[in-house]
Image 1 (spheres, helix red, strand yellow):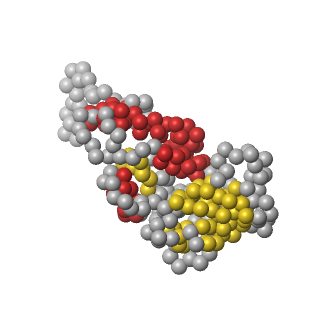
Image 2: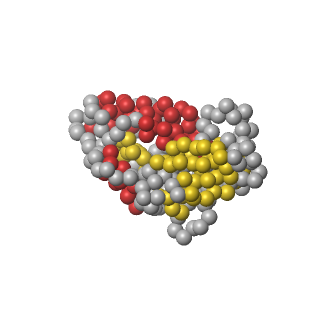
Image 3: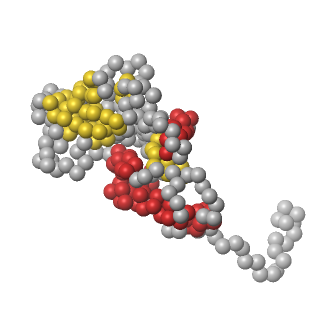
Length: 265
């Protein structure tokens, strides 16, 4: 109307427009719009890829995430498979071992695996330090598909990389045992040196560690820590760990000192 030199309104009061959209961050907004309408439909399972916005509240996520899974299953009325993607690598890492909210969030995500019919795709190795949306979706999809084969379809397969199981202090080194080793541990590509491990004594001060494969175990040590008490692996934003199993799946990031006081207790 303006381009044609005509009046731009009719003199009538404007018609009421649609209600302004509610922010997706308002509680119940996404649920009411996108989940509630689906509850009369059967679903085979759920894939959940989220967590970046919760990284500074990892302790809360330990309760929040399982509560979401329980609630959705309750709304549908049956225990459907719930598969999720652990946070990919993102952001810079310090030159020395440190504390990282993203690492704590990954730990909180992995804790949900204690719930029945759950599976997790590890994405620590497909991240991008400068891009929160990494481009490698194919590996993530492959790992989710493996989880679906096991959780949703009952296939007896290994759908996860090496998962920390236990540790034993042997003098000045720590021996780590893993589940999900498939047919054995291996390093990424043609790597010959194990990366990504840090070690600490009872004081909780972590330093980079030397690590080596010993069959299906990993031996971790440092000359700077004569009485080791704890180990961490891939504890960072975009760490460089290279431990895999022979199924080609990356080890799940972990720490053995969760809840440990600096006096070693």
